[in-house]
Each structure stands twice: as C-alpha cells, then as structure tokens.
Length: 198
Image 1: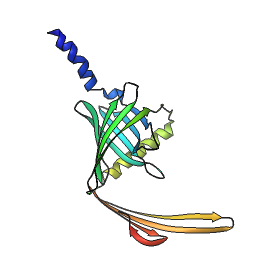
Image 2: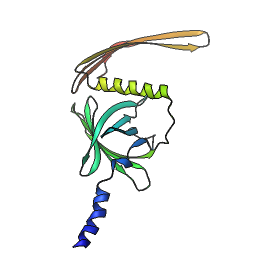
Image 3: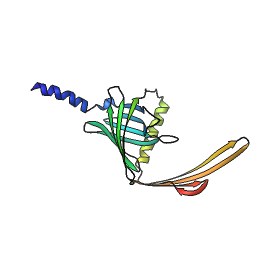
Image 4: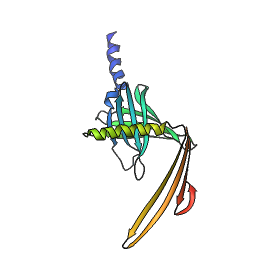
C-alpha cells in the first residue's frame, strides 16, 4: 500500500510546480523573434502577480498585470489586453529557465494564436529608493488605465528633421477612444490625409 503513495508523490510534485520557482524577472531567450519580450512575476501578500510585455516598436507594449491562479496544477494568468485576452501558463524548466505557453484570443474577430517561448531569469538589479517609488507609481498608473470604464486620449507631436542647414518639421495629432471591454478607435492626422488606425 505504501508503494503507490511513493510513486504518486513525485508525479504530483512534477505536475504542480511551486509559484516560488517562477517569481522573478524573466527575459525572452530569443528576443529577435519574440512575441512576449519580458515577464515579471511577483508576490503581493498572498497573491502572485504576472506582468508581461509584448514586442512592439519603438518600445515594448505593456500587456498589464494579472493575478495568477492554477490550471491543471500549473501557474496561470489571464491578461486582458484591450482587443483580446491572453491566457498564459508559466512552467519552470529543469535548467532554471521558464516556459511561457500562451493563447491569444482576439475579441474583434481576428485570428487567435498560441505560442510557447522560453525565458531566462534576469539577474536582480539593485533598486534605489527613488526608483522603487517610481515603480510603484507606474504600477498604479498602469492599473488605473486597465480599469478605466471609458477613456479618451489626445496627443500631439512635432518631429524635427535636420539635414545640413535645412530643418523641417512634421506635426501630427491623434485621438484614441476606448470603451471596455473591447471597443477601441484611433484617429491620426498629420503629414497626409487623416485616417483611422483601428
């Protein structure tokens, strides 16, 4: 009777990785082809929070932060990203790395995609008090934007180009409307005729 218990126990340990193994900052092993470039997993009291960034240009897009639970014994998080939902499983690897397997469901009728990417733990960097305080403010701001009931943003830009003694300026503006959970519209003006981005 003890033999089945001894056999089952290692299987349960393998099937249900501890969230302690995934807490930390992770960077994609192959940033040139990555969809997700970075994943941060942190503890907040009894909760484990997962924060992810998608590859965008010129800067990575913040996919936001969500509380982790478990699905089939594997740490998982569901991120709402405006026009879609990303369901991500985080699986610690024997080499100390992390596998993020995720499914991106597009809520606007576009194709849904699934991917798996490998991550390496980023070495802890010392953070001074001012940086830590700034990170708290940024985290609160990001959370506020994610929970807006409706939003309207307006932005203006001036881009200066200089070649020798000649300088030109391109002026532009954009308006973005957002209505949760999945309605978004961006209007862009400048340089050419106005257009709707999405």
